Length: 104
Image (cartoon, rainbow, N blue to C red; front, side, top):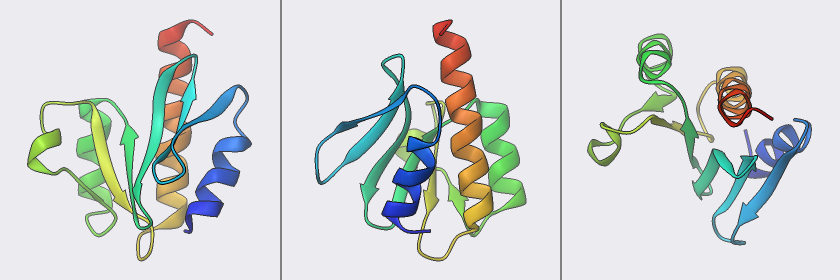
């Protein structure tokens, strides 16, 4: 998956808006983070801790949790050699989670 493909997927989600900077774009729903591009090959995706465990177990080559993120409801994914469908699904789940939490 490329950053442009990620952006296109986020744009397809209703009310998911791009914010952030040119170097680190991020997508939000109701001002709640869904996903942020950390660099051209890495994204941070919002998720519940239980869902994060499932993602890492099912796709260890795609998802991981850096030590700084262990206490947060986030997971990182690689774009350049990861499972594109799994990343796309994780972003969609993050979008729904944040949309539901905001009541939007």
